[in-house]
Length: 117
Image (cartoon, rainbow, N blue to C red; front, side, top):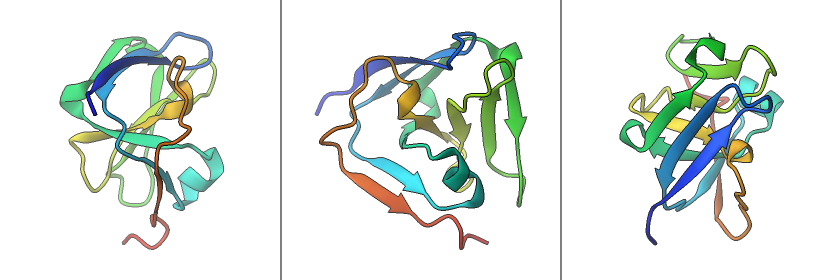
């Protein structure tokens, strides 16, 4: 499958970004924060992610090992993406923030985050 460029944004539109992905799979996670935000994510390498606007609107939340960076829009509170803990050169993108994206038919893998040390 060919990679395609997809644009995303938070709810208020202050944070905008684009990714390049072929969407081989989507993931859920059972760690304490992912359970609460109920995001469905696609993993993209940092070279396939571009923040287009809104850096000043992003706030960074870290917990536990202080390794992963979970970004939220300060204005609307939406979580558009995070910098991954185990693979810090990758982002987890909240696919519900992608414009016109339909996750139907893409395999979903459940990640075990709750038991990570």
